[in-house]
Structures are given as C-alpha cells and as structure tokens.
Amino acid sequence: MDWDAFMKETVGNIGKLGRDMPETMKGFTQMGTAAKKDGALSEKTKEFMALGIAIATRCDSCIGFHVQSLVRLGATLDEMNEALAMATYMGGGPSLAYSAKARAAYEHFSA
Image (cartoon, rainbow, N blue to C red; front, side, top):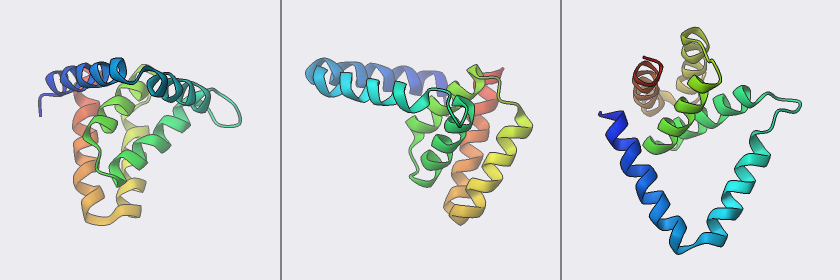
C-alpha cells in the first residue's frame, strides 16, 4: 500500500466532506480534541486504544491516522508490536491481517 498517497487522498476527501458539513466536522474535531487530552490516560495510551479499534473495525484510514499520531507521540516499535499482539488476540485472524497492515504503516511513517 502506498500510505502517503492513500492518506493524502483520504485527507482530501475528508476536507471536501467537511466543507459540505462544517458544523458536523467542527463537532467531530472538538470531540477528538477533548477525547485525546492527557488525563488519567496519556494521549499515547488513547491512541493505542484507537488503533486497536481501527484494527477491529478494519478501517484503513483510521489505522493511518492513529499510527501517524503514535509516531508523532514517540511510540516505539516494541510498544507497537505489543499493542498489535493484543489487537490480534482480541480479534483473531482478521485482526492479525490488519495488525500486519498497521505494522507496515508504522514502518512507513517512522522511516
């Protein structure tokens, strides 16, 4: 998968949609900002949770967004592999395939 091209297209498509429904996009952005704030759980922990959900729901763009955030937050390969092992354990075979996809995204975005 060409992660850069895929994410560029995804961001462009979301941007177009956001211009058509600005109030919804504003609300979604505010919700995300509030949910990701450091609190009892760190933003990085929350991003690992989001990545697990992205893998379980088989959302390629979600994997891309959350892996990019994890790289920005300094996630290590060991942390990524442990999170992917847990996602695989909880989701079985389909999650194994999407964990491999998330691992490839990590390699790409951390390079």
